[in-house]
Every structure is written in structure tokens, then in C-alpha cells.
Image (cartoon, rainbow over the protein chains, first blue to last red):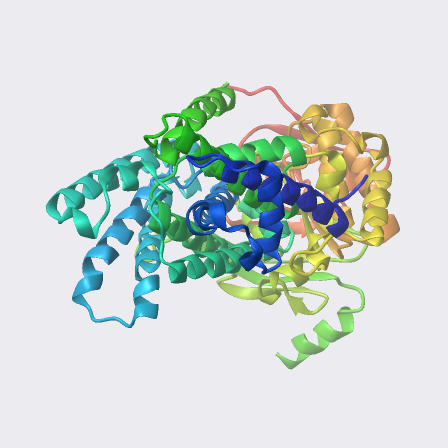
Amino acid sequence: MQPLTLGKVAVRCGILAVILFVVVVIALKFGAVPVSLYGLGKDLIRVLIGRSSQISSEYGMIIREIRLPRIALGIFVGASLSVAGTSFQALLRNPLADPYVLGVSYGAAVGSILALVIEPHVALRPEIAAVFTPIGGFIGATFTIATVYLLGRYHGDIDSKTLLLSGVIVGSFFSAMILLLITMLPSSSTRGVVYWLMGDLSTPIPPILGWVLRVGFFAGFALIYLTASDLNLLLAGEKEAMHLGVDVKKVRLVVYLSASLLTGLAVSVSGSIGYVGLIVPHLMRMIFGTDYRMLLPAAAFGGAIAVVIADTMARTIAAPSELGVGAVTAMAGAPLFIYLLRRRLA
Amino acid sequence: MERGAQDGSRMSSEVRLSVEQVSYAYSPNPSQAPIFTLEATSFQVKPGEIVAVLGPNASGKSTVLKLIAGALEPLSGRILLNGMETYLMGPRLRAQNIAMVQQESQLLFPAKVWEFVLQGRHPYGKSLRFETEDDVAIAKKALGDVGAHHLMDRLMDQISGGEKQRVILARALAQQPMMLLLDEPTLHLDIGAQVDFLHTLKKLTLKQKYAVVIVTHELNLAAEYADQVALMQKGKCLRVGTPANVYQRDLLEQVFQTQLMVEQRVNGRPRVSVLEKVE
């Protein structure tokens, strides 16, 4: 009997952080301008300790202004989607739950697009304008997961297959909405269809939005992480959890809102990158077990690593053209989904 | 009224659970007439005592158990555990005092036996807590108490039904409760495992002075292990008393709608057997 300790969680997260660092260095190296790995590692540490001015000038601009922001975006988007998926899996008691599969990402995309459309028509201070799209995404995500949850309930219990089907149907409705909105609107104001349907990290975001994303991620993650041991029991069933002292309604509400926040944030800055919330939690479970106190931070690091790798592949596979990062995650994720579904039904 | 209150305080030293004139009505939507009602039900459980709730399907046995567990709000009456109303306790306080053993839902991801038993320590932790050495010691002792120490490192879905029920009981013991509630704990067990389980339960109840309420269909096992039985039918509690008092042939025949024979055994406990159905 060796229960999980805070020390164990910290050590494993440390290892994952080192892996993430290495992946970031490698991702920085790939691109049109060749850069040495050693120099990059050194420069990255300089950035981390706040001495970015010491970076050598030839490629410093590319690193600081182009590749690093994009990688940072990938890190927070990946971590958000992965933590959201891990949370939905406990909330809905379904290992196949994922913001993309359940249609929540598309709902968030519709919310974000509507926010983008409305924004120029309402005079907003720039700070508020920056959070307008993520808020739209959050509302869209909250609304969608509520709909899918209600449709997926059957005789008061969540039925796994009904839930997944509801997700597919709701998702297809919202993807049609996305097409309709994009077709009706001038392309300059909304970005392309592919961006919203498949996800893409190539569009830079304003720095203030970067801060919203970071703060939102840490807030959402912290709220979910505080319920980690409750989620462990919720996985065993709501009745059991209640009899073991879990305030089921409160935990459900907190996790539901926080996971929607994470999804809304990620989608509003990167479109609907699929399957990250499915593949990563599953791999992390195989490595670290199912205890949410370990799984949630592992999923955050894993999601970041996965999306940075996927985006690097998206940038380089067909260079100089670019593939959407969502295409890479879908190619890896869809087969895994089928595998998990077959194994579950077997 | 005054006399009742005095009775309550006089008996509180001895009675642990007091179900007082509790009723309940269930309707799927509030505008419709209830489809199930539980009429005023009363009984008491002392520390170290096992009370079995018996009755045919849909007689209200599980409703009584849920009401005691505080999962349902009584329509009238009240249920007191050491003077506290169970429905009004917060979830954590309730789980520190009342442990439930029920048929387990399917686990989504496989868990080790020791992880499962440690879940019983959850009500004692704050949010995001990691188990202490005390928790581990308590969980180990609980596993030992039910004779399942050797199963510790096995996976929950790789042990037998009888072993599983023991582990579920161990998790309940790890909650260090005053009261144990068991919902058909021997349902899928063979007769040997049933007797094993109830024997362990009886021994622990006497030793740890738990107050125990058990819902079961097993008339003979209830007669053997329960100190009191409550016989229910169609939402009515017909009689509460010792097995010998409650197991009257005509009463049981009327409740279960079948011909039965009731014998008194030498140990004073009754035994029920089914007679051939006369067409």
C-alpha cells in the first residue's frame, strides 16, 4: 500500500516539465531559419530568467517574436484542452469524453465567432475587447456541454452511447452554424472556416489575450485540481461519492464551469483542435494511473507537449505550406478513439 | 409532546439510531400524485445491534435505507443519529458517521483493493489532501478486520464476488462510522460466502458497537444474524421485533404471497421454508 504523496506528484511533474522544455527547444529549432540546439537552450533559459535582451541578435527576433509566442500558445491551448477532457471524463463518467468529440469545441467556436462579429459594433475599452472572444467561447462551451449532458441522460442516468451520439449531433449542428456564419460574414473579421473547424496555431494573438489565456488557465486548473480527490470518487459513481462525503452538486458545478472555461479559452485563440483531451489523458492514465491528483497535472503537461509536437509537425511536414495542427491531432486521435470504443464495447 | 421529548433524552444514551414516524412520497414530477409512498415508519437501533429490513420487492426497504443515509428528505417525521438529524448533516459529517455498503457500480478504470479501501478516508480530508500514515494504518486494519488483508494489491475487478463484498465492507469500516447501512450485501454470493460475510459483520458489530441496518431478501439469514427485524409491505412497516416475534406464518404468507412453514429452532431463532405451491 503506497498512497500518492505530494512529493511524488511534484517529482513526476518536474520530469514532465523537463520533457516539455526539451520539446520546446526542439520545436524552436525547426523552421525556415536554422538555429543551433545548444544556442537555443541557452537562450530559452535567458528568456525564462527574464534576460531576453541577451539573446544574440541574428535569430533573436525570430525566436522571440515568431516561434516562441506560437509555442507558448500551443502550450496553454494543449494544457487547457487536455485538462478539460480529463475533467469531462470524470464528470460524465465516460473515458471517451473530450471537448471535440462532445461538440463542445464547436459550440465554443460559434460563441467566439459571434463575439468577434459583435465586438466592432459595441464600443469597448481595449482591455475588455481582449476578453470578449474568450468569454464568447466560454458561454458557447457552457451552453453546449449542458445541452449534450441533458440529451445524453436517459432515465436519470447518463448513458454512454446516447451521450456520445448527442455530442456528435450537437457538434454537427454547430459546425453547420460555423459554416453559415463564416459564409455570411466578411472574411476579414472572422478568420477562415478551417481555423474554426480544424484548429490552427499560426494566427498570432494580441499579447493581452495571451495573458487572459494564461490567467484563465491557471484559475480553471486550480479550481478543478482542488476537487481532484472528489473526482476520484465521482468516477466510481455519484451515489458512492455522496456516501463517501462528496458534495456532488457543488463539485459537478465547479468542474463543469471550469472545464467549459478552459475549452472556451482554448478554442477562442486556436479553433477546434481535436482529440487532445482524449489521447493525452488516456496515455497519462497508462503511465501514472487513474488518481486525479496525479492525472490532472500530468494531463496539463502532456497536453502541452502533445500540441507543441503536433504543431511542429504541422509546420514542417508540408513546408513551406502549413497544415492545421488539428489535422495532425485528428490523424493520431481518431484511430485511438476507435480503439478505445471497441475495447469498451467488447 | 413533553413526555416524548423526555423519553428521547432518557433513551439517547442507549439508542443510536431513532427512526421516528418517518414517511416519504415519490412522484416523478411534482404535479402528479405520488407513485410510491412510505407510511410512517418507526424503529430504533442500539449500538452493537443488527436490524434487518425485510419485505417483498417495492415494499420500501431501500427507501428506508436511503432516508436513514440522509440521501432523501423525509416528508414527515425525523431520523436521528445520536440526536442529529441525518438529512441535515453535511455530506462530510454524514460520511464520518454513516457508512453505506451497496452493490457497487462498475468501475470506469480498474482500481487496486487498497486504493479502494483508502477512499473510505475521504470524509476526513480537506479538499486536495493526500492520505496520511494514519489513514493507511486505518485502511490496513479495516482490511484485516474483514479478513481481506491478502487481497491488498489485487485489482478490484479481479477478485471474487465474496471477496469484493468484504473489501466494500472494509472501505465502510475505514470511514470509522457509528452506523453501517447495507443494501442487499449478499445478493450475488453463494451460500458459503453469505454466511461468511454475515458472520464477519456480526462479529465486528458486537466488537465495535456499530449500529447496523441491513436490507435483505434472505429471511433465514436475517433470522440467524439480526437482533431485530422490520417487516415491510407496500410502503408500510407492518411489524418490528425479534425474528421469533415477527416470523409468524400467516403474517409472512400474507406479505410474500406464498405458502410457508415457520419452525422455531433450538437456539430460539425461527426458520422459514417454502411449501409446494397448491394450484
